[in-house]
Length: 122
Image 1 (cartoon, helix red, strand yellow):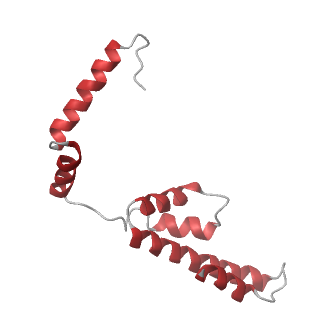
Image 2 (tube, rainbow, N blue to C red):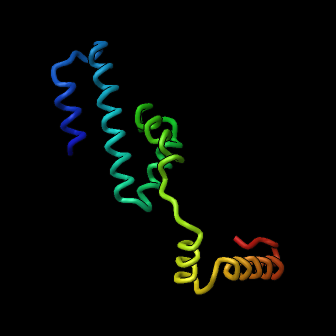
Image 3 (cartoon, one colour):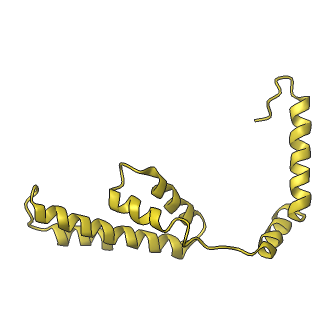
């Protein structure tokens, strides 16, 4: 809602094709992109992936200000997890350490591949 009001208030009364409107619109896009970026970081998880996706689009429906802002922080501001934490999550979710889970998945993939008459698994 804040971004919508920012657009309405900032662009109010400016002529459609004026240089001033273009400059103000750029500033509002940049402010709104920063708000979106912070919102994604505060919510984490899938919202960070959404931000990364928007940053990779490179065109409509998002303006260059959104793309550039979200692309700038794509790698240097992503949250990180320690290897131990990743191991704990994999063990909790998949029932074993990553090394065992990966070996099991590769084994199942190979087994399905050789049993399939078309040699395709997915």
